[in-house]
Amino acid sequence: MKKKIINLEPKYFSDNAKKILIKYFKYIEYSRSAGNIKNQIQDVDIIISRFKYKLDKNLLLNSKKLKYIISASTGLDHIDLDYIKRHNIRVLSLKNQFQFLKKIKSSSEHTWALLLSLLKNIPKSFDSVKELKWNRYKFLNNNLYNKKIGIVGLGRNGRNIKKYAESFDMKITTFDKKDKKYKLNKIFENCDVVVLTIELNDKTKNIINSELLDLVKKNFYLINTSRAEIINQNHLIKKIKKNKNFYFATDFLKFSSNSLTDSSKKLIKMSKSNQILITPHIAGASLESWNLCEEYLAKKIAKYA
Image (spheres, rainbow, N blue to C red):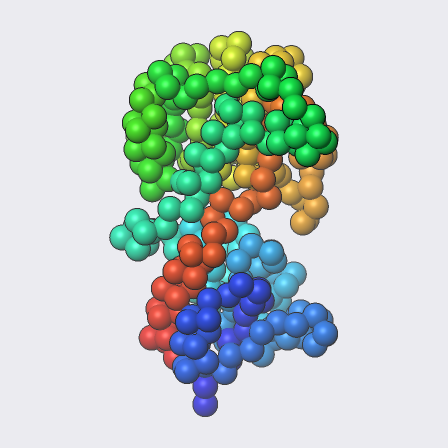
């Protein structure tokens, strides 16, 4: 008898991955019209999910047959790892799949797009044109050439971003987990641009705080495609309000129980100015990347059919 697998987020799911899963499993897709999500997952062997649902005790309590969670992601903070470990549930993800991930460029490209958009003032200038205005002097922008860039985190994305910075003739300094913290202070003190692409853990949570932010130059650009929790958002808000030449772009904001925190809501309200640019966690959400990752994990889970 085929094991039962449910896809909680079937929209835009790879057709090739779906064909593989149908071949080896009893494949079903979650549907709101079919009733409560907890009822639909209580007799499944495998769950497929991206980031929409928090896979924790509250959701999984009655899923007694569950053996695997598949998540086409490197970050796993949407999964209660302590809970699933206690219940012998394994996670199949992209974490530490270094060789495969060399082909996945979406997050790195998006990070660079945020950097270019922020320095070149693209979003706000286009908003102005949509209102039939044509005022180039209101949107003077800055070059990347010869700027000092600090790359915090030299994993897959950090290494890609370093290559992009080299091609733009930027002056590059890097910080990785092996480096001493004083080097991070120097990066914030000396660089024009800092890109955050570092893993979230106990050591990096709130690592970007007022101590570092108070070191920056008058004109400064901070780009974050790491998890939001590495930044103290309240400290960041104070800095942005205080320094009108401090610019921030991010693909993440903090949530609590699937709702935006107060500090996240404040940042969104402040984004009406040209100092802030926010995208809704889309750095890794290119169709090409999703499809490649889903097919890769579908082939892996097929071995356990």
